[in-house]
Image (cartoon, rainbow, N blue to C red; front, side):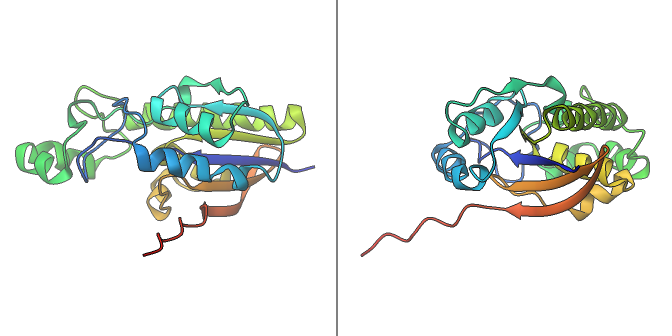
Length: 207
């Protein structure tokens, strides 16, 4: 029997600079992000989850509380976004101008790279792999649907892990804020059943 895994990226966080790296920076949702999170309710109401998990970061926890009100979520630290270290809050253009050698090292050996003062990409992939196995085991034990509220980098990496794709393939998936990714799990292996599912846009205000 197949189980369902639903991965939800948090709503828009703020305040933050456009294009800036926001990994472990613990921002909450802004007004638009709260509306996005609440609008996810119909998408998640189609099935009753056997278990709900959540990243420890505020933007994910707030999204979970608004999207599934009254449903407790278990915080799973391994669902946190990657830690960009000294790059947090800076744009790629700023980083490239200030530290071109670091950017070159990242491009040359992504798998072996550690962000300055932050997390190694290999460590990030390993913990997301562990989280994927944990979610799959919870789905199998509950014989139903597991929902996890997390981050774009985590979702892209988890898709690759569960589909058996090479880690570099994460660049092929675009995960917007407040979107749902659905996977069907068969003995711990995944089939992508939905990507970038979003709530209908808010109706335009009448003049």
